[in-house]
Image (cartoon, rainbow, N blue to C red; front, side, top):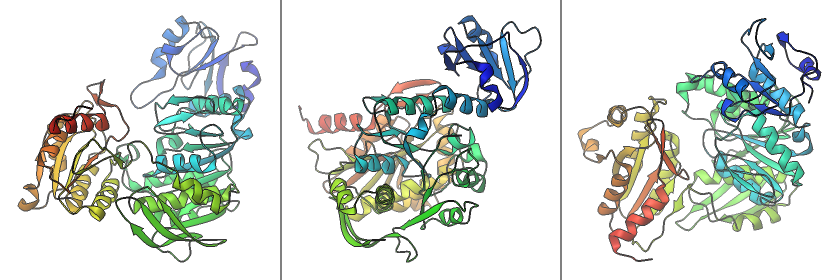
Length: 496
């Protein structure tokens, strides 16, 4: 692609180009720079891409795009732009020939539930061969699956994934849209036909500084300020912030709403909810009538997720009968209230819950079917929002009998310091006696198993599907599901 031909699409401050500059790849990481590449020097909160320009040049890039003035004597082609991330998004879309516009893209945002809703919706709409997926656990591009490296990848990665989906004859695509992805312009210019708001609770306040600021970022997905406009919005009426979405300046949107709390104004609402240890059922009221719904997912919070997914399927023209048949065959999401079964006489569930609200929901699930003790093992991530640590502790104490606090991804922060913040959520001596602090996560899980008796339930929360712990900049292999199975087999002497 000729760089000169696309510069009219971005806001240029200055440029130094020696004729027509032909580039064959878009680069955001200097370590992956290749001859013929166009390097975008992005300034982030932790690293500044401008410090890696020389490395990118040494690897053969033909031009650099930056917000910094690079000077008249800069040795290769450069373009100074007002907003490098905005330029990256626009040029990436053009480079990959606008593949998003050939797909029916559904964007899902919310603090909790994005992965469950997108993966369930993918299943309802036809499965991974025809429905693409960009999310926390994996990227499905029709003919193959790639491991996910972040919930919402960089804009260039999004457009490349969409291009591969198009080439694989995918028709629909689900994408998890994180607040970071919105704020860092990773989803700018992506044509989403349907956008979904699930909920909003405290998370990422270290980045957004306040809950209201966090919401204002999420709201951008619904107001057309990202360079494209959706046609349909699906919104949770049980969340006060969902109601605010309905008030947003989005007159061109058609709204559909859902409620698991019986809000009479909702288009999709659940009544007569029955929760068991084997699954869930409820009576669904929707625009075409009422119908009985049953499925294998656990917990009241998943009623909301299922309603969102059914609303998505309905807006895509699928019959409710077809959607409910597909729903019954959905086995669940890895690391989301996932059972670990290895011959033990107590329940073990692994869940990705890593906010106070999510731990509350997950704890309420095990309360619903547990006759014995309820034990929660969880930790709080290092170098992240410290304010949510006591809230997570409170949620754990309010929904369990025994809390085992441990490490999650401590990163460069000491586990002792994290524990001190968590202790602020303990409000009495009686509660303090129910909390055990164990630094090593494997030992914490093992201790929970030593305490467990028949009919008890252990919830291992925080990491879910993740297969590592991040400690001092190093990714250490760690899989809650695998560790739990190994420890159960060791305790009971199983040889499987």
